Image (cartoon, rainbow, N blue to C red; front, side):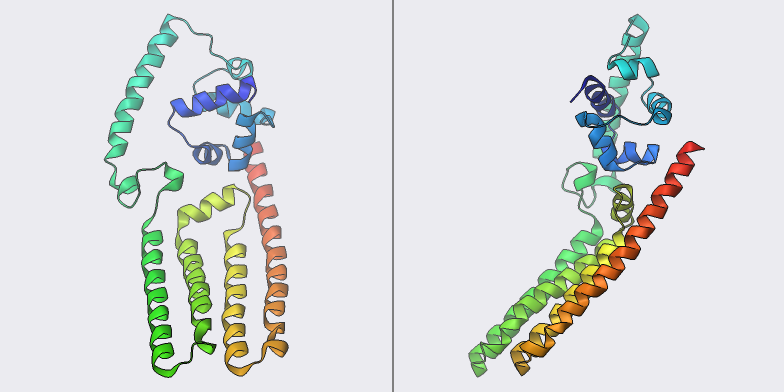
Length: 246
């Protein structure tokens, strides 16, 4: 990292702020903040003043990569560190952040939707495995019913996508990263549904050949959805740029 990137990283850590939180305050993507800290890019000139205000430093200090400290600055720094310790203590007992988390950073916290999704998917997979064993042991139909396992896995994928789409925090994070969460969700559901349809038709009716068109059509639809999704992301980025200039 360059001097600016090192300094920005230190300032962000002092504020107990994640890259995503800083990006949200500045109206940029999480990747942009990462590039600044790695020294791969510099923020636009219009963002220097907002960054300096967020971290209580001057623009000169920000560009030079160090503080011009005096006794008063040292006192304020020690006071900030004390407040950070208090904040960390309060944060450890925050039910909002840690009730359904594993004690990790905010970006890695497991949400309620993740837990419910995991429980539902586990139940589906166990029921599928039980059905496969019962059918195989009682009727000896091991071959065609092997599709139960991949179909259960694909169904779990759909459930995971739907629960993830209901999580507003994940949606906002993807938007900040320049992604369209709805595009990925729709494409995922389309392809998984096509595979769930294609496999039983092939295994039970031996229609592997004509039905190969099902996933092919699904791929085409995903391409169309992806194109419209990119247009939406581009329009959203233009809107954010206009707001930043204002």
